[in-house]
Image (cartoon, rainbow, N blue to C red; front, side):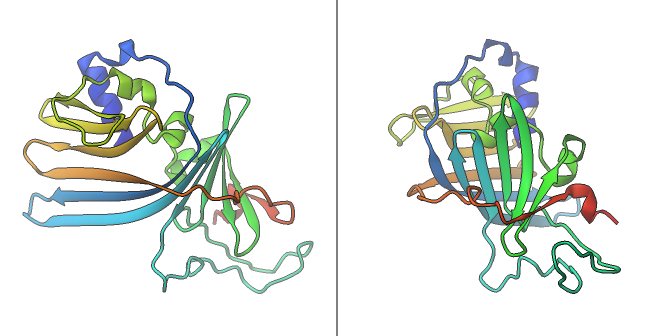
Length: 235
Protein backbone atom coordinates (compact mmCIF):
# COMPACT_ATOMS: atom_id res chain seq x y z
CA UNK A 1 0.00 0.00 0.00
CA UNK A 2 2.83 2.39 0.81
CA UNK A 3 4.48 1.65 -2.51
CA UNK A 4 1.13 2.31 -4.24
CA UNK A 5 0.98 5.78 -2.72
CA UNK A 6 4.55 6.57 -3.74
CA UNK A 7 3.93 5.38 -7.31
CA UNK A 8 0.80 7.51 -7.66
CA UNK A 9 2.52 10.59 -6.21
CA UNK A 10 5.50 10.26 -8.52
CA UNK A 11 3.26 9.73 -11.52
CA UNK A 12 1.21 12.84 -10.75
CA UNK A 13 4.22 15.01 -9.92
CA UNK A 14 3.20 15.95 -6.38
CA UNK A 15 6.10 14.42 -4.45
CA UNK A 16 8.52 17.22 -5.30
CA UNK A 17 6.47 19.76 -3.29
CA UNK A 18 6.55 17.86 0.03
CA UNK A 19 7.46 19.67 3.24
CA UNK A 20 8.96 18.45 6.51
CA UNK A 21 6.48 17.22 9.12
CA UNK A 22 6.25 18.66 12.66
CA UNK A 23 7.27 16.69 15.71
CA UNK A 24 5.05 13.68 16.38
CA UNK A 25 3.68 12.64 19.81
CA UNK A 26 4.01 9.25 21.48
CA UNK A 27 1.20 6.91 20.49
CA UNK A 28 -0.20 3.47 21.23
CA UNK A 29 -2.32 2.26 18.33
CA UNK A 30 -4.60 -0.55 17.24
CA UNK A 31 -4.41 -0.99 13.47
CA UNK A 32 -6.86 -3.03 11.41
CA UNK A 33 -5.86 -4.15 7.89
CA UNK A 34 -8.53 -5.25 5.41
CA UNK A 35 -8.19 -6.25 1.76
CA UNK A 36 -10.56 -7.55 -0.90
CA UNK A 37 -9.55 -8.92 -4.28
CA UNK A 38 -11.75 -10.08 -7.17
CA UNK A 39 -9.92 -12.75 -9.16
CA UNK A 40 -10.31 -13.27 -12.93
CA UNK A 41 -12.32 -16.41 -12.05
CA UNK A 42 -14.91 -14.25 -10.29
CA UNK A 43 -13.85 -15.30 -6.79
CA UNK A 44 -13.72 -12.63 -4.09
CA UNK A 45 -11.00 -13.13 -1.50
CA UNK A 46 -10.96 -11.13 1.71
CA UNK A 47 -8.47 -10.90 4.55
CA UNK A 48 -8.39 -8.99 7.81
CA UNK A 49 -5.95 -8.78 10.70
CA UNK A 50 -5.02 -6.45 13.55
CA UNK A 51 -1.73 -5.17 14.90
CA UNK A 52 -0.70 -3.23 17.98
CA UNK A 53 1.85 -0.47 17.56
CA UNK A 54 3.84 1.59 20.06
CA UNK A 55 5.54 4.76 18.83
CA UNK A 56 8.22 6.44 20.93
CA UNK A 57 11.22 8.63 20.00
CA UNK A 58 13.61 6.38 18.09
CA UNK A 59 11.46 3.27 18.59
CA UNK A 60 8.53 1.55 16.85
CA UNK A 61 7.10 -1.70 18.23
CA UNK A 62 4.61 -3.72 16.15
CA UNK A 63 3.01 -7.04 17.05
CA UNK A 64 0.25 -9.07 15.42
CA UNK A 65 -2.95 -9.57 17.41
CA UNK A 66 -3.40 -13.34 17.55
CA UNK A 67 -6.45 -15.41 18.37
CA UNK A 68 -6.56 -16.53 22.04
CA UNK A 69 -6.05 -20.17 21.05
CA UNK A 70 -3.14 -19.40 18.75
CA UNK A 71 0.28 -20.61 19.85
CA UNK A 72 2.76 -18.04 18.58
CA UNK A 73 5.49 -20.67 18.84
CA UNK A 74 3.69 -23.47 17.05
CA UNK A 75 5.92 -22.86 14.05
CA UNK A 76 9.07 -23.05 16.16
CA UNK A 77 10.76 -26.37 16.72
CA UNK A 78 13.72 -25.52 18.87
CA UNK A 79 14.66 -29.02 19.79
CA UNK A 80 15.52 -29.99 23.35
CA UNK A 81 16.35 -27.19 25.72
CA UNK A 82 19.99 -26.81 26.70
CA UNK A 83 22.11 -24.37 28.65
CA UNK A 84 22.84 -21.12 26.84
CA UNK A 85 26.50 -22.04 26.36
CA UNK A 86 25.74 -25.48 24.91
CA UNK A 87 24.27 -26.18 21.47
CA UNK A 88 21.71 -28.88 20.84
CA UNK A 89 22.71 -31.45 18.23
CA UNK A 90 20.58 -31.32 15.06
CA UNK A 91 18.64 -28.38 16.39
CA UNK A 92 16.23 -27.12 13.73
CA UNK A 93 14.87 -23.61 14.15
CA UNK A 94 12.20 -21.71 12.27
CA UNK A 95 11.64 -17.98 12.26
CA UNK A 96 8.23 -16.49 11.53
CA UNK A 97 8.37 -12.67 11.51
CA UNK A 98 4.58 -12.44 11.57
CA UNK A 99 4.23 -14.10 14.97
CA UNK A 100 7.09 -12.33 16.76
CA UNK A 101 6.99 -8.59 17.63
CA UNK A 102 9.13 -6.32 15.45
CA UNK A 103 11.25 -3.58 16.99
CA UNK A 104 12.45 -0.84 14.65
CA UNK A 105 15.14 1.49 16.02
CA UNK A 106 16.54 4.74 14.65
CA UNK A 107 20.08 5.47 15.87
CA UNK A 108 22.19 8.26 14.34
CA UNK A 109 20.05 8.26 11.18
CA UNK A 110 20.52 4.50 10.80
CA UNK A 111 17.55 2.13 10.90
CA UNK A 112 17.92 -1.19 12.73
CA UNK A 113 15.39 -4.00 12.91
CA UNK A 114 15.13 -6.79 15.47
CA UNK A 115 12.51 -9.29 16.51
CA UNK A 116 11.99 -9.92 20.20
CA UNK A 117 10.85 -13.37 21.25
CA UNK A 118 9.76 -12.95 24.87
CA UNK A 119 8.81 -16.64 25.15
CA UNK A 120 12.32 -17.92 24.43
CA UNK A 121 14.05 -14.70 25.56
CA UNK A 122 15.79 -14.18 22.24
CA UNK A 123 16.52 -11.03 20.23
CA UNK A 124 16.91 -11.73 16.50
CA UNK A 125 18.83 -9.04 14.58
CA UNK A 126 17.96 -8.54 10.90
CA UNK A 127 20.75 -7.29 8.61
CA UNK A 128 19.84 -4.74 5.96
CA UNK A 129 20.32 -7.25 3.15
CA UNK A 130 17.55 -9.38 4.68
CA UNK A 131 14.98 -6.60 5.23
CA UNK A 132 12.94 -7.73 2.23
CA UNK A 133 12.71 -11.28 3.60
CA UNK A 134 10.91 -10.01 6.70
CA UNK A 135 8.69 -7.64 4.64
CA UNK A 136 10.40 -4.47 5.84
CA UNK A 137 10.97 -1.68 3.32
CA UNK A 138 13.80 -0.02 5.26
CA UNK A 139 11.93 3.27 5.70
CA UNK A 140 11.88 4.82 9.17
CA UNK A 141 9.14 7.22 8.07
CA UNK A 142 6.84 4.42 6.94
CA UNK A 143 7.39 2.67 10.26
CA UNK A 144 7.02 5.68 12.54
CA UNK A 145 4.15 7.43 10.72
CA UNK A 146 2.69 4.47 8.74
CA UNK A 147 3.00 6.74 5.70
CA UNK A 148 5.78 9.20 4.94
CA UNK A 149 4.39 12.64 6.01
CA UNK A 150 6.18 14.32 3.10
CA UNK A 151 4.28 12.15 0.64
CA UNK A 152 1.00 12.75 2.46
CA UNK A 153 1.57 16.54 2.48
CA UNK A 154 2.15 16.36 -1.26
CA UNK A 155 -1.29 14.84 -1.89
CA UNK A 156 -4.07 17.25 -2.90
CA UNK A 157 -6.77 17.91 -0.34
CA UNK A 158 -9.93 15.92 -1.00
CA UNK A 159 -13.44 17.30 -1.32
CA UNK A 160 -14.52 14.66 1.18
CA UNK A 161 -15.33 16.29 4.52
CA UNK A 162 -13.72 15.03 7.71
CA UNK A 163 -15.72 14.53 10.89
CA UNK A 164 -12.54 14.33 13.00
CA UNK A 165 -11.23 17.65 14.34
CA UNK A 166 -7.69 18.33 13.12
CA UNK A 167 -7.80 15.61 10.47
CA UNK A 168 -8.18 16.17 6.72
CA UNK A 169 -8.75 13.89 3.78
CA UNK A 170 -6.20 13.85 0.96
CA UNK A 171 -6.66 11.98 -2.29
CA UNK A 172 -4.78 11.01 -5.43
CA UNK A 173 -6.32 9.34 -8.48
CA UNK A 174 -4.33 8.16 -11.49
CA UNK A 175 -4.84 5.61 -14.29
CA UNK A 176 -7.92 4.11 -12.69
CA UNK A 177 -6.34 3.73 -9.24
CA UNK A 178 -7.02 5.83 -6.16
CA UNK A 179 -5.52 6.47 -2.74
CA UNK A 180 -7.31 8.32 0.07
CA UNK A 181 -5.77 9.23 3.42
CA UNK A 182 -7.44 10.75 6.48
CA UNK A 183 -4.41 12.40 8.10
CA UNK A 184 -4.35 13.69 11.68
CA UNK A 185 -2.16 16.79 11.52
CA UNK A 186 -1.54 16.98 15.26
CA UNK A 187 -0.82 13.31 15.94
CA UNK A 188 1.03 12.87 12.64
CA UNK A 189 -0.60 9.56 11.81
CA UNK A 190 -3.22 8.40 9.29
CA UNK A 191 -6.57 7.54 10.83
CA UNK A 192 -7.67 5.75 7.68
CA UNK A 193 -6.02 4.72 4.42
CA UNK A 194 -8.02 3.51 1.45
CA UNK A 195 -6.70 2.38 -1.92
CA UNK A 196 -8.07 0.44 -4.85
CA UNK A 197 -9.12 0.69 -8.46
CA UNK A 198 -12.23 2.21 -9.98
CA UNK A 199 -13.15 -1.15 -11.51
CA UNK A 200 -13.51 -2.51 -7.96
CA UNK A 201 -11.24 -5.50 -8.56
CA UNK A 202 -9.21 -4.71 -5.45
CA UNK A 203 -9.66 -2.61 -2.34
CA UNK A 204 -7.48 -2.10 0.73
CA UNK A 205 -8.27 -0.26 3.92
CA UNK A 206 -6.31 0.51 7.07
CA UNK A 207 -8.12 1.79 10.20
CA UNK A 208 -6.03 3.30 12.98
CA UNK A 209 -7.38 3.81 16.50
CA UNK A 210 -5.54 5.34 19.42
CA UNK A 211 -5.28 3.46 22.72
CA UNK A 212 -4.14 4.66 26.18
CA UNK A 213 -0.38 5.03 26.45
CA UNK A 214 1.27 2.05 28.11
CA UNK A 215 3.70 2.80 30.93
CA UNK A 216 6.16 0.05 30.11
CA UNK A 217 8.24 -0.29 26.98
CA UNK A 218 8.66 -3.92 25.85
CA UNK A 219 12.17 -3.27 24.49
CA UNK A 220 13.53 -1.77 27.70
CA UNK A 221 14.49 -4.94 29.60
CA UNK A 222 16.39 -7.30 27.30
CA UNK A 223 19.69 -7.71 29.15
CA UNK A 224 19.00 -11.38 29.91
CA UNK A 225 17.90 -12.18 26.36
CA UNK A 226 20.13 -14.19 24.03
CA UNK A 227 21.32 -12.42 20.87
CA UNK A 228 20.90 -14.20 17.55
CA UNK A 229 21.30 -13.35 13.89
CA UNK A 230 18.73 -13.93 11.17
CA UNK A 231 21.17 -16.33 9.51
CA UNK A 232 20.91 -18.65 12.54
CA UNK A 233 17.39 -19.55 11.40
CA UNK A 234 18.17 -20.30 7.79
CA UNK A 235 18.34 -23.91 6.65
